Amino acid sequence: MVSREFIQGLPKAELHLHLEGTLEPDLKLELAQKNNVDIGQSTIEEVKASYQFNDLSSFLAVYYPAMNVLQDSEDFYKLAMAYLAKAKENSVRHVEMFFDPQAHTSRGVDFAEMFNGYYRAVTESEERFGISSQLIMCFLRDMSEESALEHYEMARPFFDKIVGIGLDSDERDNPPTKFQKVFEMAKKDGFKLTMHCDIDQKDSIKHIHDVLHVIGVDRIDHGTNIVEDQSLVEYVKEKGIGFTCCPVSNSFVTDDMKGKEMKELLDQGVKITVNSDDPAYFQSYIANDYYELAKKMDLSQEDIVKIAKNSFEISWISEEKRAAYLAEIDAYVEAHK
Ligand SMILES: [Zn+2]
Image 1 (cartoon, rainbow, N blue to C red):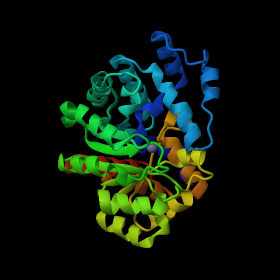
Image 2: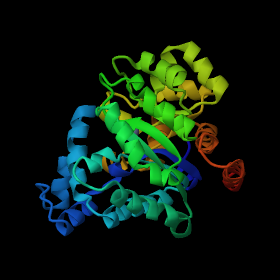
Image 3: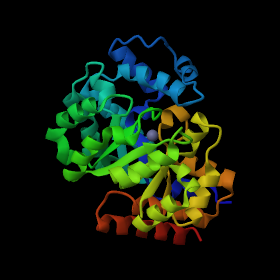
Image 4: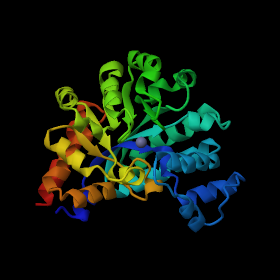
């Protein structure tokens, strides 16, 4: 089996990463103190112990209240910079980071205050960490389309600083078509599109069908249930539509990391990638996600290299940058023969 060291040093892109999910207990405590926010915990151990969940709703019940500690631009900047430092240790060379504006405006934080903090980290990431970075704005699917449209308008002054639009949070009874209008607008405005299709949902196949054929996404987040429908698999293969999978996250919110499905799709030539999702909550940054999947599925070095290459192939970057990153992988593999 491929070694942890090989995985750790392998150049990779991270494409499924919620900035709000990178809030480590020490930063949460520090910001709580700074902003006088009562989080109900006063030691790192207590915060760690509060990160307890066994499905998506219990996870979201811990996840959203934690964000109260993020108040001003500096806090958002610090959060993103702390993640980028970890990403560097994991040999991430490019990252496309999700942020959820509604989770902040709904508790009184100004859109620009939040956005400017995150964006400042983006402008510094190349020089500080050797990582190119971009932002994807996500809508919370358990909120209304009206709210999504409102936030789309709030983001308008920053459109040139956002690469894509996504959809996340609780999928139950919140189908992709609920947001058809705002995603149509986003497509017309030139944004790349992605949507979460969570694992084993009530209407997984219908939702995957609709994100592909009604919304017309460029990527799918999670989405491994597609393996149940060969015609959909053929469609994504033909279109080169990739999947941002998160094995450790899956094992927290379902009964399995879904490695079998990922391997089967990979073998069929589907552009499967591996990502960390909410690394502070699942205590797993991207290299560990690769490693856990490799261990569970006994993946070869070729499989792991394929996954890393896929991550750049489905990144929303220029062809020149893509070629340069892929060449970096080839050089790394050559040096480790
Ligand atoms: Zn996610």
